[in-house]
Structures are given as structure tokens and as C-alpha cells.
Amino acid sequence: MDIYDELGVRKVINGIATVTVLGGSIMPPEVVMAMIFASRNFVSIDDLQKKAGEKIAEWTQNESAFICCGAAAGLALSTAACITRTD
Image 1 (tube, rainbow, N blue to C red):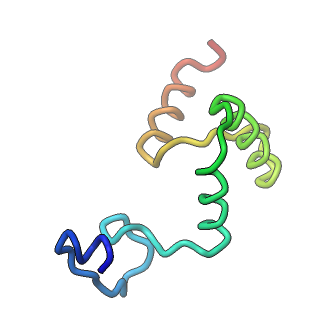
Image 2: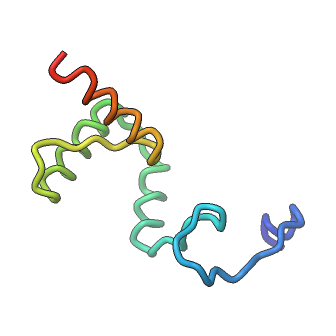
């Protein structure tokens, strides 16, 4: 018995694509392994945020990048950056 059976939650077949209402998507094994590694170590979140942003900016050939918790947060941060400009 798994947690879904224990809770009485019915499993479904995702015939749509990556959709949040169905739990997003099944993660590749590499992602699961990275999550397991991360769950067993402590780091400064500020440092991780900065370094991960730098790496993603490098990969995407942008001057900077910022990782946030979702699309709504990203839109709010982008809007704030546009409003405040260089302030």
C-alpha cells in the first residue's frame, strides 16, 4: 500500500501533458537522485540561489537569472523589476 492508497486517492493516467492539476510530470531518475542528494545536505539558501542563478544565466546565455517558486512569483518579481528599474 502506498500513500495514495492510504489516503484513498485514485491514481489516473495523464493523457494531457505536464499539468499541475495532475501533479506536474513524472521526474526523470536524474532529478530524483538530485533531490535525494539535496535532502541529505545543508547549504546556505542565499548562496544556492545566487550560484544556481549564475549557472542558469550561463546555460541560457543571459546576463542574469533568478529562480523562484513558480510562474506567479516570477511574474511578480519581473513586474517589480520593471517598475523599479535600477532603483
